Amino acid sequence: MDLVRGFLTLWIVTMILFSLNWENAEGRHHPPKKPKKHVPSPSPSPSPPSSKSPGVPSKPPPKKPGNSASASVFDVTSFGAIGDGSADDTPAFVAAWKAACAVDSGVVLAPENHRFKITSTIFSGPCKPGLVFQVDGVVMPPDGPSSWPKADSRKQWLVFYRLDQMTLNGTGIIEGNGEQWWELPCKPHRGPNGKTIPGPCDSPAMIRFFMSSNLMVSGLKIQNSPQFHMKFDGCQGVMIDKLSISSPKLSPNTDGIHIENSQSVGIYNSMIANGDDCISIGPGCSNVDIDGVTCGPSHGISIGSLGVHNSQACVSNLTVRNSVIKESDNGVRIKTWQGGMGSVTGLKFENIQMDNVLNCIIIDQYYCMSKECRNQTSAVHVHDVSYRNVKGTYDVRTPPIHFACSDSVACSNITLSEVELMPYEGELVEEPFCWNAYGSQETMTIPPINCLRDGEPATVGELSAYECR
Image (cartoon, rainbow, N blue to C red; front, side, top):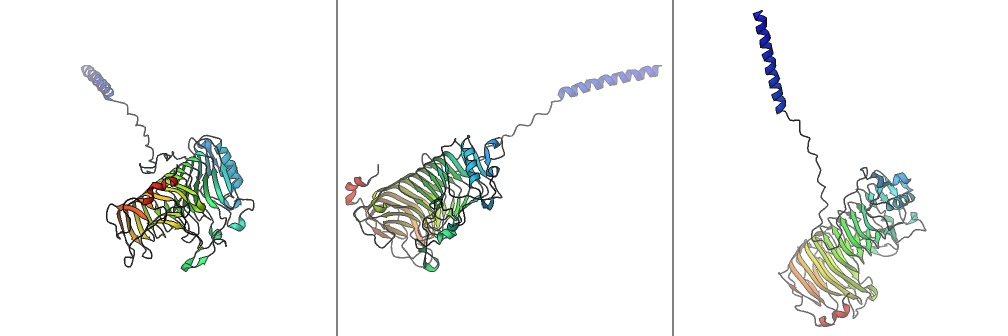
């Protein structure tokens, strides 16, 4: 009996101790903390330089089809596009555009793994803000002049008109099918081995933005245009970033990006190789910033031509910096016609690498497309132009620096600093050429330039008639 009582007492004590220990253990226990919600930081926008011209719009956030905003994505295949490279998908693109245009942040989507053929079309506004035209597949025009509909314009293909806050982007290709256009028998152009072969007439510009504002173009491959690849006319606030533009070296009039009558334009981080000017700046442009562009083969970066048919031309506040120009007929060029009026002022060329370039630095105020041009008493006034840290190699067939200014209206306030240009191969050519050009050297140039005149031209007091207002 005593043995049973002792065993029972021991069992009770054991249970009490076990209970106390369990309570203590529960008192020390903490429920697991909820994992912190990971909020991914937004991917940084491509970094156009902070010094971009005032008014250049910042990049809008990318539109991703398939997310919560998918209701505003209008896939052209849902509107009847076939995307086999032969069917005419124009009606489907027009229908998708109208639907996207009517909603905030609408997206016209040309999806990947398709080849869409569309004819000359004007995509017009006004539309709701935030409209995106997203090309992830291939978009192309009819193949050559013989396939071009007779009712369509032969001067332009894709036109975006009267739009605000619109983006053209994607991971796809806009293909111009330009080869047959380049061979049309109208304007002669240089062929292989220096031969002159026929060139284009009424060849369509590939992409044109007209009378639009706050535009963003990024990410696309644009290639083989019949004429200009991209053209901006009458636009305000344009951001171009990370484009690839290409056409063969001898393709005529295939300017990469052409701008005219447009203000506050930024062109950044892009690769352009083509048969004419890499970037061309026409009359009526101001506040243009070009940074991080690789250009060539091409005809270089050109301001002009300006003043044709005795017209007034005004270009101001343009900067080209941190760029490479290679295997090109020109580097940075200003070209004007005799008899023009107006001015080119406030141009800066900084940190530019030249690689086997003819005419690395050139001002040509005797630009002419025929043998019938004559010297005239009026000209576009070129002044306040600086070249800083321009280095590399030049093709010895021409002098690397060429300032040919008007007899009657001298170039003024040209500044050179750290300009070092060596022959790509062979010996140094004759010294740089200057005609009626005034300015200063902050450092000695290579090759030495002794032809630049000091001070101001005698005509400086009479130049008010040439200034742009």
